Length: 167
Figure 1 (cartoon, rainbow, N blue to C red):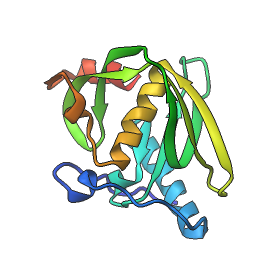
Figure 2: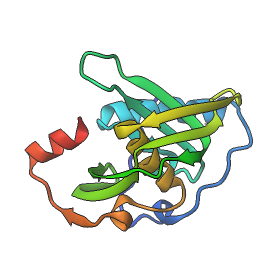
Figure 3: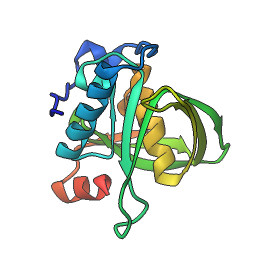
């Protein structure tokens, strides 16, 4: 396992539609393990393969609803939003590939996501609130869409504001 370099805008890979993953092998498992290490080192709550320079449809999310809980790790290959609530909410987002910037983005409050785990087994995840926001943000990366493309307002947050955004 290793920490990979996170790429920043204007890297071309961040604007491309990522390729579907068709082979579930040791190379994929190494990428997943490296991305988990990279996410934890960053630190962040989500990471998409394009953010480490790999144009493949893979996202990693590690998130806990509150500080008392151990964060749950989600690894989703070829994720697809199959259901989204009509109800949406404006919230503040930031991105490891766009350091020093935050923005207000409107996202669906609830989602159902389908995809595959690292072994190629189908999975289905229901997400709501902040977790749903993270999934939408990371899946956008796979389509070359950045949160700044969707933001209604963008600014440079203070370090205190950045800490709040990460939590």
